[in-house]
Image 1 (cartoon, rainbow, N blue to C red):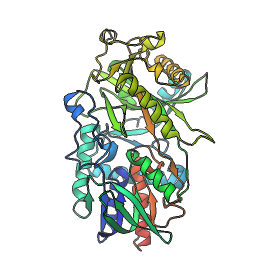
Image 2 (cartoon, rainbow, N blue to C red):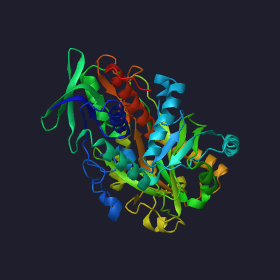
Image 3 (tube, one colour):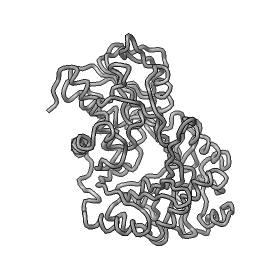
Image 4 (cartoon, helix red, strand yellow):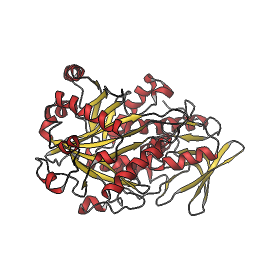
Length: 464
């Protein structure tokens, strides 16, 4: 099989790379390689039956057309300050312009017109209130597609891409092939050799270990990235209703007094549900919300960010070990009342039933998170819960539920040129979360556009 461009991964980075190439050079032969299924075939048994994770491989929540973002709550953050580190590579102004470009593409495919966080007076008021209780509010504008809206948008993009590109589902990329310092193609797990003049590695978080291995194999320089470890917090929706109505997702950052660790509020889901996801034999917790269906609860993650220094260079393995320990303790996701955690007691089913909150992840096992999370992580999380309680009273109530563990594996960051091409292999690009340069829908999509435009430039095509 011979192509001009081979794209590994069909998450936002891979999709937007294909869309951009198709728009400005429709004669290019493009193939996308995806280990998961197409958007209309992705289905999680747990989401339908609530019987607990069945440990599908690959997990349909994480892999398939649209990537992990397709089954998320579909937040498009219109800000250069969140969602990745592209500003460090291409500059803030260039990133801002590309975010607006990508935002228009999402609108074209059905993203909602409504923007949260556009009222500067309201944002400033919440920022002042947060500052008074020791937190920083990072201003951002957000479009919320919701889980079903995100799936609709990704389905529309699939309908476009499949008309001009070959898409190989249930196919894993095994190795990237290089000759004379140039990428020349990809070998699949089925033994097929796909020749291509350009190779785009955009495997998403689910492919972070694969891409890290390829980087080592091809002597591509990389650096350790952050690992975020924490819990998913579930509260009555009314507790943070006011801030949710105005900002939708408050990006709040807190530095713990005892350890000076950065703790951040991430992935806020008003009226949402807590979910689980399975990757590489570990089960972790997540959350999502819908555009048109609400529960009586809201949930969000509190994550402690750690960037290790030499000689330690295995942050992903560190996060995995903590998740594995939690799985060992609860045969899956653990859930604990905040009151029990503070008192050093394991939560039981009877104690969980006495809370005013009906858990939205019934398969979670009552347990004790202090046996799984390091002390400094728990201490920092409890500090931020108290700060949040001062901002929105009720967050740190005795009945608040904590699910664990939540781990965000940010791949080892590839050292890339400004065009996102690897520094020592020509025509090989890294894009999206899998390359360690983004951590969200918007910047991942932007990275795909960046790669496509460099390929187009090499092909002699000018993009307006």
